[in-house]
Image (tube, rainbow, N blue to C red; front, side, top):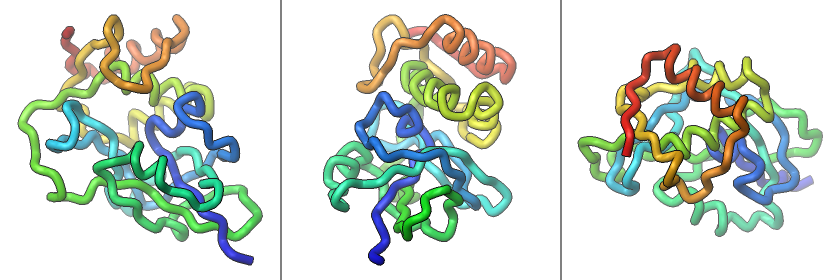
Length: 188
């Protein structure tokens, strides 16, 4: 049987409302850690992954219908699609090929100051809350590096193209996680 193509999403792709990949399942990627990435490809920090033997991250693994990677590759412009079959633990019974998107170090020129958009962080955390509960959302924060770039509060005028409105409980969770970690937040 030919392996079916899948991707492992670890950031905004965990939030099912940001995509239409219907066949998605919770999964874990061993040997990877998230990091906020600063490059000249975007105007804000964005999530990537780096190899880290000591870390396992949660996310969603989703089937790419017909093996048509075009739309996903466009959405993930700036990333390289990397084969990660041996790293991903999942419950899919069929043979699968799994890819993970990661920024290749040195591929894009670095920018000096690029904070995390709160509207982007909101989308990611909302996905983790829905898929893995509060404990899973806490693990997202714990298995992600690069927080020192700071966060800009753009909730009133979201700059992230796939922003979502959070419930009062979801917003309180995000704000509380930021406060507990004493992350720097500034207004637009």
